Length: 204
Image 1: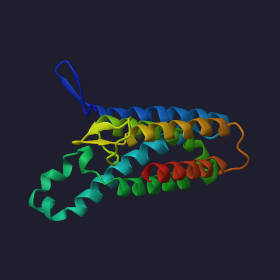
Image 2 (image 1 turned 180 degrees about the horizontal axis):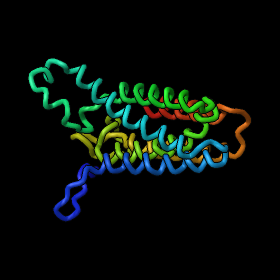
Image 3 (image 1 turned 90 degrees about the horizontal axis):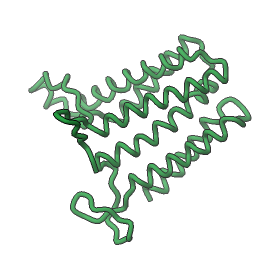
Image 4 (image 1 turned 30 degrees about the vertical axis):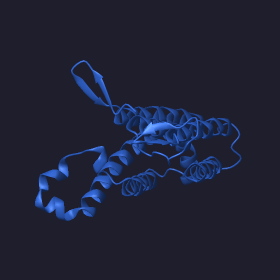
């Protein structure tokens, strides 16, 4: 685990850096797919940008509301952004709402746009796994398996590695399927099925 990357006098939060890199590479991939499907690349990049901002604000607001009494006592703490003080579920919901509203205002076709975004999301999922590996989050159950890792005072399943491998496998198939999509929405549906299966497998 390497939560902090020390570069000279700078201490960089590696998980956050990996997530930013994932957003950037995922955006580039979706823009490339957009050019192939004649959807505006600027519309896609702007959608991702606004969804990212909306997701961060939604995740922060969700966390603040969850611990409202603490923030009433110390209001300045609301603007202190920290990856550990964000609520992922609320952030995802907010990002989806912002992206949907943006797509409606720009008259983007729903299913085709989702297909364009899917390869980028698949890239981002790989970096979520890498961020979990760097931070030690999403750790597994205790095990005596020979490939177990020492984490949080016990020998555990390296579920972060499982997560990365599963995400890479899903990404591989998504990139292959992208060239043979049979109908609008095919790619996002395939991604949803594969990701759901991989998550259930890893969690089990």
